[in-house]
Structures are given as structure tokens and as C-alpha cells.
Amino acid sequence: MAMAAAFASMLFKKKVYFVDSEYERGILIRGTEKIITQNLYPVYVDIMIELLKGLFNTNRFDSGKALLVNITKANKEAYNNLFNAYYYLDNVDYKKANEYFDKKEFVKEWSELKKEFSLNAKALHFLSDGEENIKPYYVLASLINNARRRAEETKYDDAIARLYRSLELIAQIKLKNEYGINTSDVDLEILKQHNVNHDFRPEFKGSIKIGLIQAYNLLNDLEDELGKFYIENKELVLNNISSRNNSILAHGLNSQTEKQYNKFRDLVLRFAKVLNPKINILIKENEFPEFEI
Image 1 (cartoon, rainbow, N blue to C red):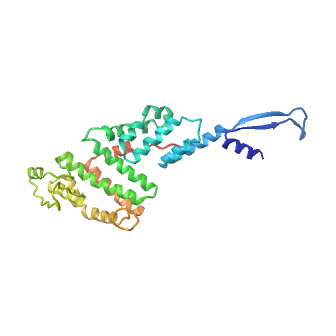
Image 2: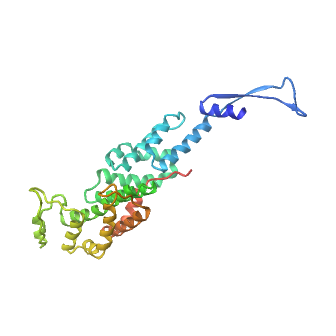
Image 3: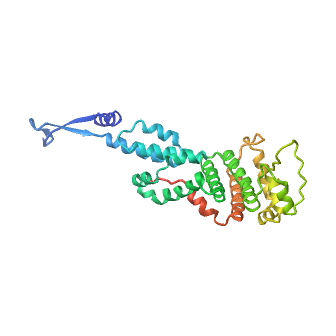
């Protein structure tokens, strides 16, 4: 009975009253009865905050915001901004994430994560408003981390789709930063300047667009180290792309596995390191913080 009353008090945010007495040899002494009041709601809040932190750690940002409705004694604004900031980061909407990301507020509320928030603030700066020649490297690191989070949720088709985009982005970054070539609108005059004779035959009049394989072949024609690395690992790349193309989220009907994700991840990381030897540092800066529970 007492346990039920305590539990109901905690859930419905009500005080609970107990009658206490003095006893002698197991017998109640009349006139010693007294009423004791207890407020167990703080216990409920502690439990809810632990749940909030667990939801954040597992990227359940919408669920976390919904849970906030049931909590009154907590810094709801800080939690709301936290969940919104990382929700938009997870959905690669960096400008929107920047609207909610408040480093000072976050560090004040969760000082134990100061280092992680500082790294994320730096990354978000380059992701949202950074220099154009630096921003793509941070976007790449963000995508790789995004793929890892999807894999941790066992969403391997989603994860591999992000890895495919990462592999494509690596070639695009190299072509743009090193040679001024935009894969969505290839300038043939730039190719001529580099003595590259590429036979592009667009199926329609307008901009010349090239895909992942063409981009890496073009890098090889430019005698770029990344293009040479692609040629050396061409079979491995094609095998991983073939696996991705069979995904239900690409062109096939198959579901991808953890093993396939790991192979594709390792391949992307190898290419990313050729592009930028410091990519692991950028990946670290883009990793989401995690509460200790």
C-alpha cells in the first residue's frame, strides 16, 4: 500500500502523507502519532532526465522534445535547444542547427561535455558559414559520422547511401578545390588547359554533368594522386558500389548488412585520408557528445 501511494505521488506530482508513531515492544504508543509529508516529484524528475539523456545518446531527438512536456523542474529551454540543434545537425541542415546551438548555454548546463561542445561549435561554424574551400571537408566528416549513427541504429541501407555520397563528394572536393572543375557543370576549357582530352557526349544540350566513376577517371586523367589511388583500388570500389546499387534505397530490392557497411566505411575512410590526411581530426570534431548514464 505504501509503495503504491509513493509511486502514485511521483507520477502525479502530488505530496504523499504518512502517519508515523513510536512503538514499545511492537505496540503503538497512543498519542505519539504524527503526520509526515514527502514530495517524491524530484525523484520523478531525476528519472525523466536520465531518460532524456538516453534518448539524446541514441539520436531520438523528437522523442526527447516530447518527453520535456512532462517535466517542469528542469532547464527546459536548454534541453529544447540541445535536441533541436542536434536534430538539425543529424539531418544535415547546418544553418538551422546553428540557430539552436548555444555553446555557452550548453557548457553551463552540462560542463562535463565542454570539450565536445567546443569541438562541435568549431565544426558547425565551418558547416554553416565557413570558408568555401574548408567547408566541404567538414561536410564530408559530417556525412561519415551520419553514416556511423545510422549503422548504430542497424539502418545499414541508410548508412551505405550516406557512404556512397561521401565517396562521390571526395572526388568532387578534389576536382573543385584543385582544378576548379564542377562535376555538375564541367568546363571543357579547363580540361583543355590541363591537356585532358575527354570525350563527353551529353545526352541533352546544356551543362555537362559527370557521376562518381567519371569523376575519378577524370582525376586519373589529370594525373592526380586521388585518381591514381582510385585506379589502384578500382575493383574494390566497383564491388562496393555494386553492393550499394542492389540496396532497396538505390536500384535493387536487397537489404544491406553490417558487414557490407563496414567494408564500404573502410573504403571511404581510405579515400578520405588521401584527400585530406587530417580527416580523422575533422571527424572527431563532428562527433556528437554522449551523456554518461
